[in-house]
Length: 567
Image (cartoon, rainbow, N blue to C red; front, side):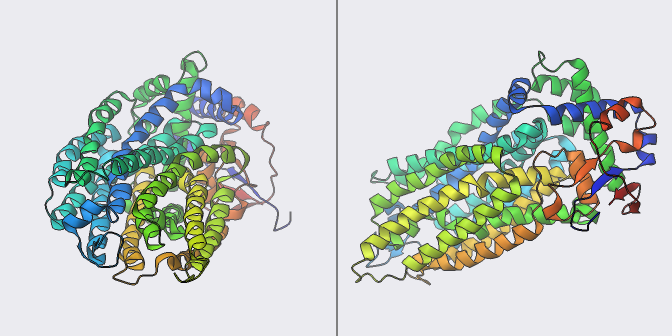
């Protein structure tokens, strides 16, 4: 076989056979086969309840984005907020500006609190369960919002951000993990991508609230958007209270009967009977045991050992590249458009169109997910964003005295909307799909937490430099900053080509073996995986199953303990 041709991975693990009953392995093989054969329509009919619960829980991201992404970013161009907290700046659109250092503090306060919340979540969710952690966080957020509503100084606002950031940090990962665990292979991409759309709904609603309060001539023009966050508290708490617990979490904690009950609650009994539910849990047990054989522990330290180190690197970079792509300019949309020369009212109107792309782009991404893989879409989207940002940066060099200045201003506004559409059709939704699928099931909660921390760290860095790029009292780059982010997005594209694997149509057991055998990122799609081969002799049911999955068996090379890699 040529060195350039894909190899096949075959499990050869006698220790696994000793720890699992052969009936469990046979049941796992049946469930794996059924999941791979399931069509999209069958997945919808069978897992309709899981889809609805996952979509409902993803709404937990809305409160975070109402404040962190839209409200604070929009307030830098909000006249009443600027008069209340800003400093005089003659010649600017509103006559006042928030100093760059305070913009950095306001942007980074929630990120700092979010890191604390993320670290707590990674430990607490595994120990006490995601539901208890989520409900506790909702109650805490209800109290912390008071600080934001009644803040009378920038210092108090920053303190409120840090405290609110702690429960927001919990919300940021639990919904992604839940969506990746309760849905089958065919639906995983769509449901994890839905998380991005739920952010978009929150952003669009909060943009509408900010715009609706724009002409209120009092402090309530900036207080009311904070008040709106209380609207979500009771519905979210009830959703979390009644939703089924993730069966994967129950399996990891040895509660198999409860896991079967959770599977039945998440599926349609007309299409998935009691025996099928048992098979599904058996598949989870089998995957969990494979991962235990590879690596036993579930601490944060384990995320940086063995093959999980590579998986952690990929999920962290995938989330960090959300900001390295230049997306942070979209979060500062109002200020960015104003520095480009667009009036305040038109900037807020365009910001509504800009934020609508979170919904439009995500819906468009569902069609792309059907046709293309995760690696193709994420890499392609990053490359396109690099080109668009380069054009925006070039248009920023037109001086105000140029006869083409007005045309360049509106071109920048249009390109920013196009940039956000590309982001939300590719990088935005695919990020959640990739981090949900790439992490191992035993370390998923902690891996997603670490990926989100990498995002928050990058967000803090961007929160320091982006306000200075855009502030007319600091670096004052304006649209020219697009060139900086075009280079950043270009380098990120190179990383994706070299390191980002294709996870589409792979079960978690198959992905475990692909990473264990150190398959290069560009060969993930073409490599065949046989995760039940070690039990052929023990059970004829598995032999029958494996006959339907032809592989090429040649001389085995020892790659890891208990496994064989045939090439």
